[in-house]
Length: 164
Image (cartoon, rainbow, N blue to C red; front, side, top):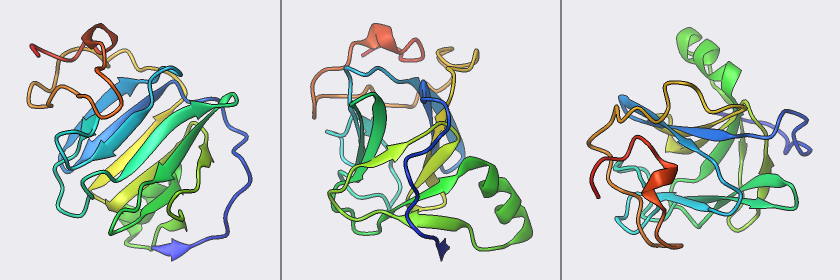
């Protein structure tokens, strides 16, 4: 991964959803300004990503002052912002992906079409300008119900959740 200079706040549309890519799995969560999300390997994370390079509580995405922000929560392997369109192109060519490393504790404004590597290319988040039609179809029954680090997330927000 090649470092790039920290960017100014993105001039892209405000994200409405986040795609979570976890190894071979991918699923979409609609974003709600009143619901911050903590991503990590621990059961108490709101979104559990069971990858060994993802820290127990790796990072947090939240709404503040009219924008989405991402913060690394002191992860062991770091969080790196990238342009979503660059990922496939650089992956196919075997090139280093241009990334912006995040410092622990700093909130970084995020725009649609940006992503965050959570310590590895196999665990990443991609911010989307819209909630895609395929979201909420219950396609991933293995995904654990998000739970309680920040509060119970109402399952009616996420049509893809089954049971509870």
